[in-house]
Image (cartoon, rainbow, N blue to C red; front, side):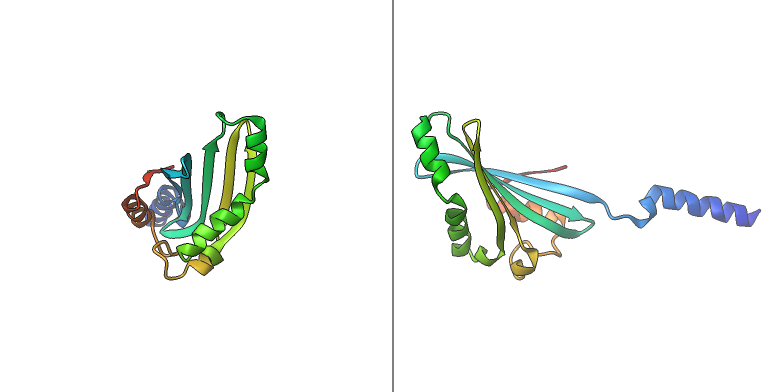
Length: 148
C-alpha cells in the first residue's frame, strides 16, 4: 500500500511541477524615441527559459504614412541596419548586433535584429539575467515592459 501511495505522490508531484521543465517567458519592453524629428517605436524582446536569458532581439518601427512614395523609396533604399549597428557600436553592443533585416510594408518601416548573447558578456543583460532583473534594468532606461 505504501508503494502505491509513493507512486501516486510522485506522479502528482511530476504533474504539478511539469517534470522539471523550465518555464518559458517572453519579456517585451517598448519605448518611443525621436530621431531627426521622426518618431520611432523600439521594442526589446527577451526570451527566457527559467532564470536564463535565451534570446534577445529588437524591433524598430516607424510610421511613414505622411511620406510620399518617393520619400518612402528613399528611406527603404537606405541601409538602416548600418545606422542602427553604428548606434549600437557607440554603446558597446556593435559586435553583438546580428541578423538585421529591414523592410517597408503598408508605409511602416520595420527593422529587426538579434543580439549574440555570447558577445554581450559584461553587459547589463547577460545570460544569467532573469525576467525581474531585465525588467528592472530596461524600465530604468525608460522602457515600459510586460511579460507574456
